[in-house]
Length: 251
Image 1: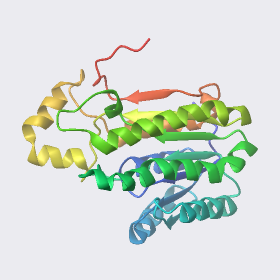
Image 2 (image 1 turned 30 degrees about the vertical axis):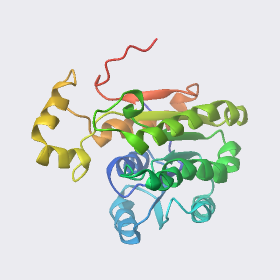
Image 3 (image 1 turned 90 degrees about the horizontal axis):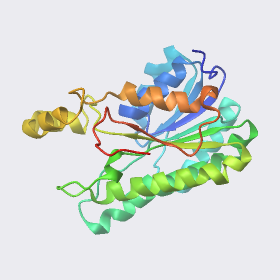
């Protein structure tokens, strides 16, 4: 299936590793040009060098909590790539361990989305663009360990993005959310859980009908489809990618 992404210009935040990296690589493989950002300059440089064989990719070190720096990255990316067709918000801070740290999650998880999309909106509207935010299935259930700031701000991300399906949708920009369940990333949180909390990891595996956690590619494939012309009539949707981990029934 030709997704119609060849020649498109995509921005992906938090894309040096994990889900963001898989999304950037998949967009490149489909013929899009990609600009990435993350906080660590060395990591950005390494990721750009490693992905350059897949296509046109640029990157900058950006602290997502700094709205001015984020807007500057958006503007620079649009200038270098020749526009913006896709904006993927993948930036998230770790869950706050105390309530006074919630402001960090507020800035990184939520305000970087609002400000980043705001900076990209005019460029996105020029060609019927697409905004995709990475959410989580954790917004739909309570965790005994306490989901705290991570779930709370991901819920806000989901609500704001789907609301923009009406606001930016009127300007031809589709806005959707992809909500992963437990995803195994090498060196990531679930890798740590597997190594240090084996019983919990195995119980989580068994709670998936297929008996296994998802992979970053599972998420990247859905994001790439939603970014594409093939999803031109999909707007205001939260797509769960969890292998049936959640037991709710949606109507």
